[in-house]
Image 1 (cartoon, rainbow, N blue to C red):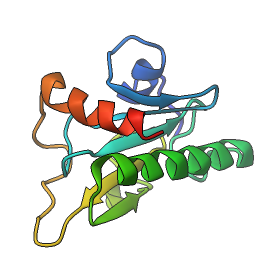
Image 2 (cartoon, one colour; image 1 turned 180 degrees about the horizontal axis):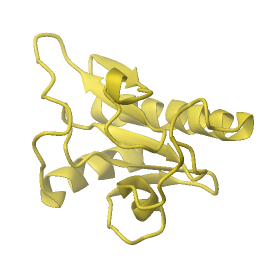
Image 3 (spheres, rainbow, N blue to C red; image 1 turned 45 degrees about the vertical axis):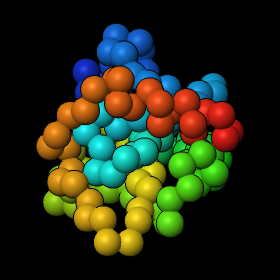
Length: 138
């Protein structure tokens, strides 16, 4: 499947759609998921155009995992969840809903079920305090 530059993550990367940034460097962007599966759910996207992990260059993949590791550690320090789930989906059959490669960082607590993926949107007012805690832990 060819890369579609009108996908929502490409539009966020170009600044056409706002996001609550947690971290950014020259190769990646991490921001709060507006449809979180758990409180503190963060998305990490490469700035390289790639539909899935197989389309990503080795340099892009290295940058994606490096930022994921850095931001996941900040989520752990800043929000103190019991555990963290890292999820990277490839293709609609696997559950990928945005055709731009990305990693989900999802805080987990025992006995707390995950919300459904990409169903319920939360407000910026709810996400910003969590983002602030994560940014402070970077």
